[in-house]
Amino acid sequence: MIIYDYKTSLSLQDCTGHFQNAFGRKAARVSTVKRWYAEFDRGHVSLHDEISEVRPSTAITEENDATVRHLIEENWHITYEEIRGRLEIGMSQIQKILHQYLKVPKLCCRWILHELTLEHKRRGVEI
Image 1 (cartoon, rainbow, N blue to C red):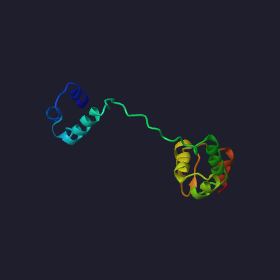
Image 2 (image 1 turned 180 degrees about the vertical axis):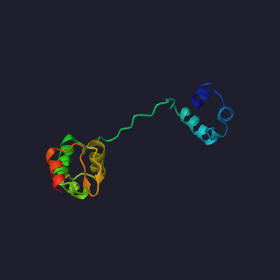
Image 3 (image 1 turned 135 degrees about the horizontal axis):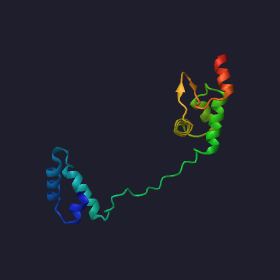
Image 4 (image 1 turned 135 degrees about the vertical axis):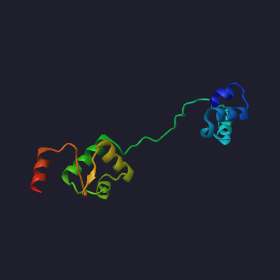
C-alpha cells in the first residue's frame, strides 16, 4: 500500500490516513510510513530484499561432517570442546553440523545418531 500511495504521489499524511482507515489500530505508524517514503525518495523502490554479500562458511564441509560423525560413533560422550579441539572450528559451526546437518540430539550426556549400526545396538544392549 505504501509503495502504491507513493507512486501515485499521495502525501505522507494521506497515506497514513489510508492505513488507519483500512487497518485501524493495527495500521503502520507515521514514522514507519515516513521511513518508507524516505527510502523511495532515495530510489529504493524494490519490494524485494537486496542481496547481501555474506561470507560463505568454510567450516561446514562434507569432510568436517564426516569427521564429526566419526568422532560421535567412536565416543558417544564426546563434548563440544573435544570436537572443537580436533577440528579447530568455531562452536556455532559445530552446533550447526551436529543439529542441522547430522540431526543428532544430545540425550543424557551422549550423542544419539538416528541411524544406529548393528554394532551400536549391540553395545547399547551390553551397557
